[in-house]
Length: 495
Image (cartoon, rainbow, N blue to C red):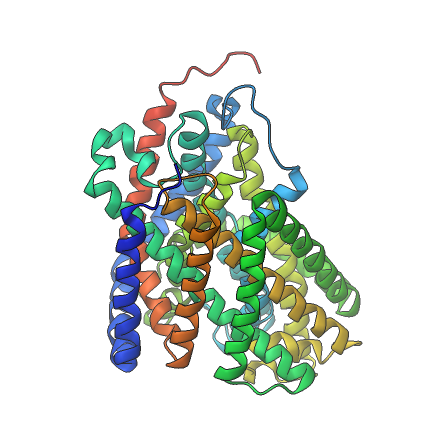
């Protein structure tokens, strides 16, 4: 069945209310959401740290436990996509545009602007900057996505349940998940997905605008960003119309190729030897400090705690808010894989790619700052990467590649989101109708455009982070439900 559920109409109503508030009184909207976000970060920071660390340990358990042999589907099912295409899809949906946006800017900030604990512009700050960039985009994030996606994929493909968050809780709550409580849970998931992707569309438009300004002198402003979103909307709706096995598959592969090409440019044209040395050293530093970083809350140092709230706690809440979208998409493309293969690849492949990415872009940016090639610390976040390219040979070509990659990631994220939103608002249908996907595509773009017009993206980002708190409790219930269901399985004794 592909009928539209009540989740669609309720979420649309909530979106209209939230966007209406943002437009009617944007300053108050931002003030209120900032205050609530700050309260959540300072009060529940310890909880987020424990939660993400628990999910990492649980992920490792699933990889090595007898349950690892269980297939996400029937025992005879096999994966629909090749491993490379599958990894490309994970990478595009899970990180995508964020890596381009923060690849140079985050390590540079930790080094030159606001280090976690060290003095700015020191070698110690350099090492710490890379360590924390790995940490914020590494194992914890992908363990969380993996566990939520595992629960969705297991119930959807192994147990024949619809592809809904609420359906994963049936082992605990039974038929109640088909009533108002189930609708409430699915509405929260759709709300977080719609606004999370709209925020990315807004930030993506801002960065593409910055790149076009750098390359061709395009005016930085709302009109240009409106045109960018309009063009991208047409492109991702065309892709969504073509379906999962065509549009998203080809775009994800193109993303990976473009990302590797851009990475190759930076590795060759940047400080190559330093990049490889920093990668090796930072990987060791990340792994050896993983436990201490995982539980650090800086309770007795106000400035360190403020940094934690601004970066680590913010990231943990931000990733949790993205879990309904990213995890549902990961689950959808992972049918036929074993739990062991699924969790191992979902945790390791994107983490390693992110580490290499930050090593290349972060090292190049910090080195340019150290050597006085440019004062990148003064550049805005969206311009940092282009200012960094300006210090390298063939900067125009590299910058053009970067804009193309951002646009491609932009399209893929929106494309994947329309698919997931379509699933969640049509009772978990694996093939939501094109009309539903197009509707969601237009709604996401409209949210981004409206809030860009009133400078409301920060308030929107705050709203999503606030929504992460109730969803984190749903995640815990999903884990309990998954473990309860897995206990009913009888893993084969033979490998």
